[in-house]
Length: 208
Image (cartoon, rainbow, N blue to C red; front, side, top):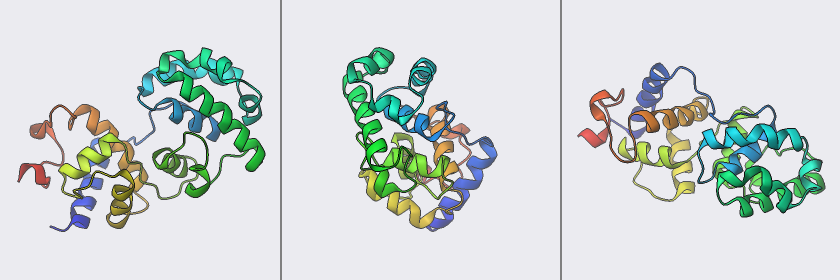
């Protein structure tokens, strides 16, 4: 079975197992998703969703963040971890959006990764969830599960992203990555792969 064939089987299996492929971060506009994803680094989505309402009630626009200070933003996000670095990034992110992008969240990866604290993982999430473009969000779940499936034998996230772009159906790639997160939390965990209850056990190379 080729990698592309395995990828298609994985897409279909996960689609049946997790029909609702949604981002687990709560947001109502592109800026909120951008900021929430920055907060989610080394922090759970559940924790981010707890601090987000007060943060986004105070800061509604890129200008609001740009005109604030890292110290003030930090008061809202202390429980997220690494809050000093994150608050500095968020204020500077707001400034760059205002100064360079007319206060709009960019719609392409090259511009998104220019923003402070924003890497390819976040950029791909924005591209897929906000702009509906083919995206591959390479997080720890994606890296682990796609490697176990035999889709690659890589460690570098950027290389994995481009490898998966070659073999995943473009229109399915973003939802596939959301489903990998759900599957990685419930079945194919970092501590143990519960192959006996996995919907992909019939073609996963980990079992061969």
